[in-house]
Image (cartoon, rainbow, N blue to C red):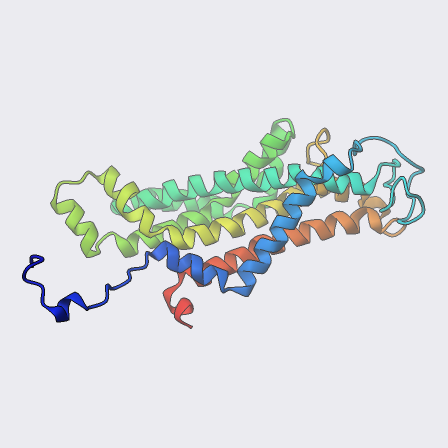
Length: 298
């Protein structure tokens, strides 16, 4: 229809507003109280961790007061000291960066391995699917914590080794989720259309199917980061954390023998871990509502 062919009726027709799925999901996430609360909590944790050192520049390894001083007894250590006399507040501020680093790096490793294995298994199926799923089941039946302990013990327990060990033992769930999404999408019309025009398998996997399977994977990624943070705390509690890097898990591990006499040495770092994991979990819950059309309509 040309401009001259337009009638007054067609000229007055309002334009249909098209909304992209990303904008719809962002709008739904803003309306999710769980997602916004989790985002608020996580922003506070990040500010406390990365801005706090500028206002409280005390080395967490320095001995500032008498050991096992309760909170409120001295202005030098307002939240008390641990069994060596180190400032608990300084440990909370400076230890958050290492804890978040382990959680995020381990989460990235987990998602990378899981998506690679799940994508190839779900797309190629057949013998490739059988081999990759048997490997996945092998890792899934292994005790994750025990396997991570073995890896950390075999190598030096640095923060990088801990992150790698957590990522290696945590990917099977992501692989199965990715495989299920690829099995669901691989035979849809737009995927078959891409095959019919001669698109290569590599392009179909990464450019066509994966972008449409990202919604549940993003939700899984947020939950994976929270699980990795708990994993790091568990390893540090068992004495397998990096002793040269201050983290919340290291604080709990160092104070576990004095928990009855110095509750503050483990309660405050434990609360920070709880708050951080809660923030990631609530964000994952909000993203699940945002990316799920049925929940979005509700």
